[in-house]
Image 1 (cartoon, rainbow, N blue to C red):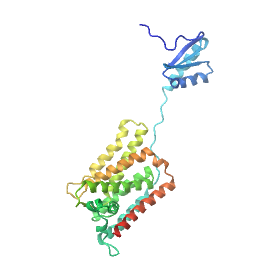
Image 2 (cartoon, helix red, strand yellow; image 1 turned 30 degrees about the vertical axis):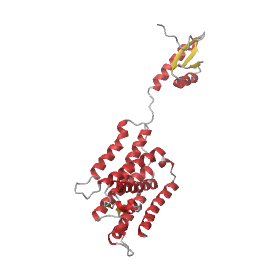
Image 3 (cartoon, rainbow, N blue to C red; image 1 turned 120 degrees about the horizontal axis):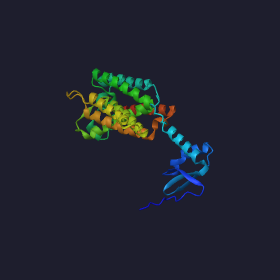
Image 4 (cartoon, rainbow, N blue to C red; image 1 turned 180 degrees about the horizontal axis):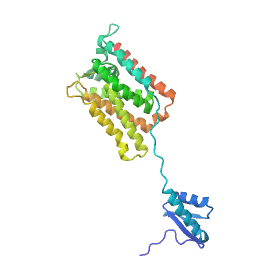
Length: 305
């Protein structure tokens, strides 16, 4: 059976030198012919596009197309570079450290005649009853010096890295949001008598935030799959190393998991909406101030009840 050519025979005096699935597919080759001053005609129909040249231009056109194809084969898309450093991150880390250090003796001994520990810890029953501010205030309290130092070290490290990738305001606001969301989710997943304190829920939120934001960014850039999953793998390894504890029961694994998951969801949203790219320096500053304002308001609500 003979298959009919959808383009039909070439017009008299013309010869076909190239065919593609669409006009776009032959566009660059046509530009090469145009640059050499070779007369040409592009025909387009439902079957695709073909390029015709006069018979006396056939040899020159074929040679030019062969040379162009050889040169195009050497082209490589420039490799996507690492994201820019948007902030040194030290000021945000300093604020985090000062808040935790200042709140440590206040949480242990109280201040102004008030029991800040009881008023601020994450009580699942109280959170379920509507005292949502406890999901924030609990992040600033620590059981002992060892608990405090561990969270200061990893919180500062992860916070600086997140600020460099996302900007200090966006990074710390997401850290706070992930920590509060993690505590809120845990309050409804655990028993009503469960209580918890510590910044680690937010710190693991930062880890999830960084891992998923970078995974999403690399996916948008169509990086090889190994590079795409590397941030998720690294985040999972760090979570397994730091987040599950030693089996003594002192580590709130559920809070770490809910914080990590909340941060990961925020990271996907931040990367997809390109918030780091859209936030100006002023927006970063306002976002950081808003995060500090949320902490202050949460403690105000806690102490007035």
